[in-house]
Image 1 (cartoon, rainbow, N blue to C red):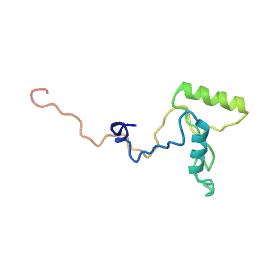
Image 2 (tube, rainbow, N blue to C red):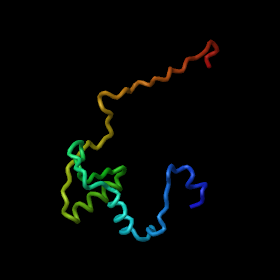
Image 3 (tube, one colour):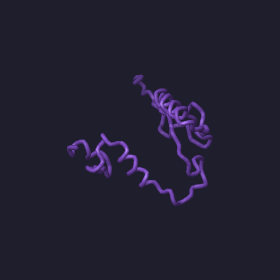
Image 4 (spheres, rainbow, N blue to C red):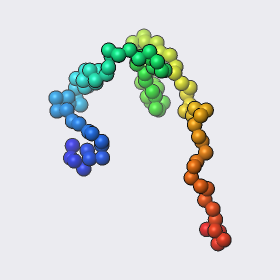
Length: 103
């Protein structure tokens, strides 16, 4: 990857031993990066796998894979993006004001 493409990516690395044509090798590498020895019993995931469908296409793929493998899942959130109650939804930036010329 030419530097002009990689430079904006913070701490980017390339692995010549794992070509994109070998997804299984990339998968094995990524699972080794995960910490499976420290139990995470807190939070919504609680040390379990989580998927997030960002589009209807993603959701179709996830649902088809669950069906094919007979894997049940539990919903963690609704189908909409919702802010938490303690999130400030009012902008701290001042509203635009018109001057005496209406601009």
